Length: 123
Image (spheres, rainbow, N blue to C red):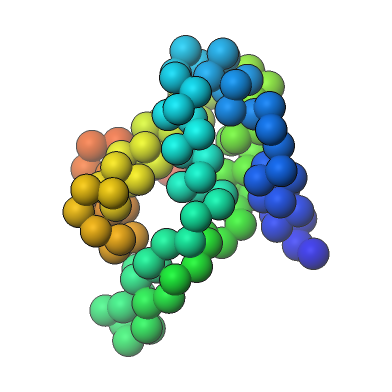
């Protein structure tokens, strides 16, 4: 199994991360739990490449070691401003999907306008 997949599986099984992140960040546990479900648990209508002829699929997000690392820093209380921006971005993305439909492409674009995912997370 890929190391990022292993991290995602460990995060999915972790029963203490939501409370720890809420305690460290001051966010409500319900908000952190929503972000966790959005990032690591729920399947989404992945349509980012539909305009290139790739059919959308219903699947979980691909495991990403950078996002997993961000989550683990948040849990440990040694997070960065970029990790907090990831929480804001994913909160906005999940909200958009609940309110406006399942399109990941549209939700991500809307979240980027208000809470751009920092490039530092993806480098």
